[in-house]
Image (cartoon, rainbow, N blue to C red):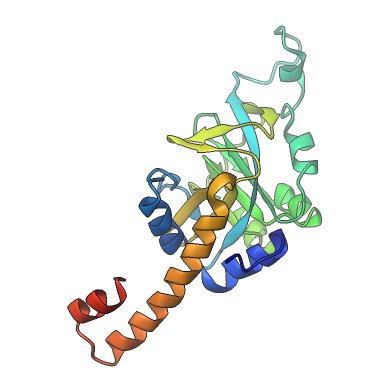
Length: 230
């Protein structure tokens, strides 16, 4: 039975009781075996945790920053639609961006400051982040390839947001649940989230029981045979 009535209650449950490994295990059992983003996407600090609805952002490479050429007026704007996407963030949403070459920073300190004002949950980018000390000082959950100062300004632009994106074979739709911790980032499609989180809560609670039994001396085979968890 569902234990939450709204997104805030769900996010609170995730933060209090769940982690990516147990959520991923449940999706594997349900046949959703490609829901983890690539392992290069890591928390900027090991204790960072993110849980929230995806606000998908589509980035594209550009060559230079010449605003006087080209046929697409969008590409003549600095950053394309990045500022609009950033301002469109809602409470408990995760700015999740992909589409460009992972060769430059897609997130930084000022973006983190604005996201905090919007009460966003965090940022996950298929590329690098920069202004690392500033982001850490803000304590804003950021998941990326790691610190690298090379900027997106002359190299990439946001061309759309709240559209489906793909990160290394994983499709992310606007509104999917994004969960990230030290073990990676996984995506829970909205269509299956009630079953996933209900079963994940059950498994996580069972794992705590099994841990206690093993610490008390129960052999692993006996524990698995009795609880079906390892």
